[in-house]
Length: 410
Image (cartoon, rainbow, N blue to C red; front, side, top):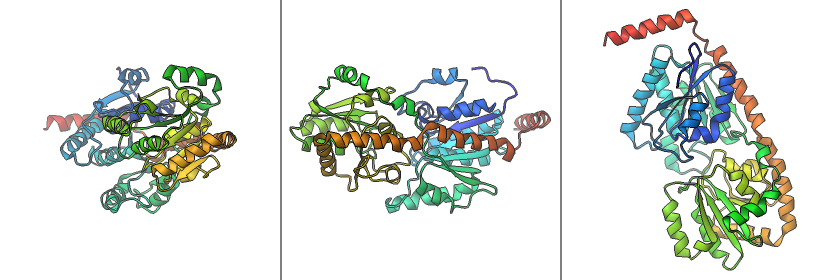
């Protein structure tokens, strides 16, 4: 697409290309409203949330495919991504970068440091550190030292939960740097308001009888999201009239299908794939289950609360912030199938409790409404020009001449 001349540029970096469409489009709108040209660097061959580059181009986003990988073991490709990002920062004269995902944060911040004489302003959103209270010791050994050191290259480190925020406040940030906390990436409450009129139509479309207790879950199909716990739960519920809808794609999809067959529950489980209509599916469900092992601040459970669904979830640093056990959901502290079985049976037998939990859940979700996050991000992005002064046209010309001279000398 044609780039707009004269605008200062902000580069967003993620490891998974669909991450921007799924979670960061509101940040894009804020940046564009402030007059920035938004660039986006990611691995466009790897996507969990779907790839729609045409949508990005329509939004005026300049795309940069890079070789970045989620795995820290992919050293060769991540070093290549580092070189690619250094080139982008130099050639595009990037004013600021905003990194997401652990490897995006590592490679992006190193590129900002190495990318040129005029280093960009560096923002990093930690969507959940891999080191946390109760995390495996190896996580602390691998990830904590890296984040501690890279904090020194970070102008603004943004966290999405309180535990991570307190930890960042104890880290040595870049001189003049700061920590910020947002209440998740924000949910659009109005999309998940009461939509009882959709219930029957959605159930008919997916073959879910009205007298069947419909449990929904959503997330990448991987070991961390732990969907196999729900399959064992369905098996333990035996003759109960229930159905489990699993939304998402990922490396564990085939393994989960095989497990469902082995447990003899294939007729009670639907693999719904990646969805961009979760708000509709939630209207047809009776409860939302989320057995994830580790999250920074998961959005799907918050959307379920906003839709009025009782939440059955593992106990994590984020779920402890918004779940009141047996008031708006159930915290499954051991995260084993028997706990989910108990919660589902209570909900089936006590419709009045479901109604009360629905009301409490909607109230709890208001704290994480999109406008609250948007207000904080506007202040953060507005500070870029103040804390990292914009180059004058004369400085831009001088820098261009420097870079040109540098290239000729190579």
